Amino acid sequence: MFYYNNFYGMDFIWWCVWIMLLLWIFAIPYDIPGQRNKKIGPLDNLQRRLASGEIGPEEYHERKKLLEIDLIRHT
Image: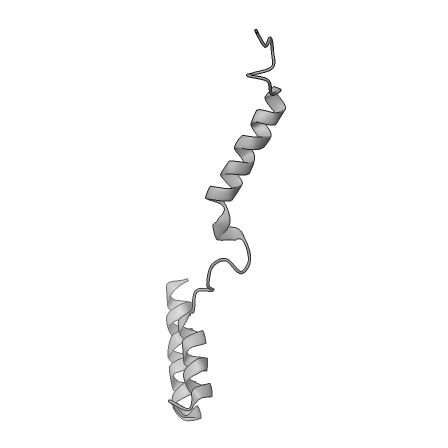
């Protein structure tokens, strides 16, 4: 039995749908919210250390200034 213009029983659009679905499942999970942990930056780490009491407010402000200066320098 020959399937003219049906690509093994499925229309061309259905093949495209299946291929796009597979690509979405295997290639795009990095963009789905909640799938990957947020990358923690240096300022986030510094705020966490202040909140946990590892460093005091004075040290926090000093290091924050250094981070801001470094950020300005690299942009």
